[in-house]
Every structure is written in structure tokens, then in C-alpha cells.
Length: 157
Ligand SMILES: [Zn+2]
Image (cartoon, rainbow, N blue to C red):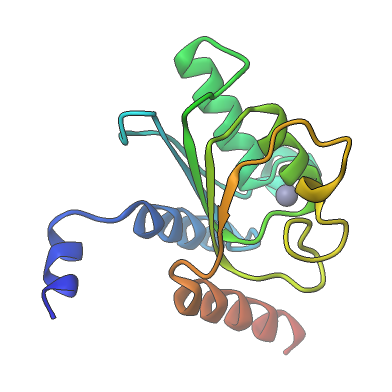
């Protein structure tokens, strides 16, 4: 019962990721948002999709957040950092998450069609994947899934 009150006082990392997803939607992008926490648990980077704005098919929320966090920490590795994203990462982002040495991956909605973690190529289970983050799916799933459903329904209309 106090969960909602606590969340209003201090947004959870997934709340921050969902806010980034909403902001992306406001820019006409696919509503996906990501946040990276430092090993101490502080948000150090956040991003939403910007593929249209940047004319860059790799400008997914996770990649933009990883780039920003690396720049902030002055390192090409994010050892001990955790990444929150509203949708199961695609194969490209899953590979980048591995390269970045992210400690834990938390994602919202599963993506049966485009996901690369628990669906499709399952990047982290490949023998060529040398760093596997701990993976926790279904975090804040209903909000993330509802946002995506509304977005794609509006597109089809
Ligand atoms: Zn991606």
C-alpha cells in the first residue's frame, strides 16, 4: 500500500526509464526508454529512442544511455552498473550491454518479435558471449507494454 506513496517521493529507476519512453513518444519516436545506474545506485545516464531525430538506426535508448554513461565515467566499460529499459533489448543492444559489462539488466515488457535476450537469438546464452549480465524481466511491464500498444495502435489507425 505504501508502494505508491514511496514511488511518488522517489521515482524508481524503471519510473525514470518510463519517463524517457514517454518523452521519446512525444518526439514521435518509438516509446522506449533506458536508465543506467552507477555501482552506487545513482542514475548516471538516461535516454529514449532517437532513431528518427538522429537518422541513426542504432540510436536505441540502451545504446544512447551506454554511450552517455561511458562518457560520464570516462571508461568503455560500465562494470558494476545496472541498466533499466522499458522493453526487452534487441539483439544489437543486448550485444552492446554485454560489451559494456553491465552487471544487471532489468527490462519491462518482453518483446517476442524483436527481443534478443529471452527471445530470438538469446544473445547472452551464446558461447561467444563473454559477459552475461543478470537479467530480470517484467519490471513495470504493464506500463511499458500499454505505452507500446497504444503507440502501434495509433500508427495503424
Ligand atoms: Zn536495441
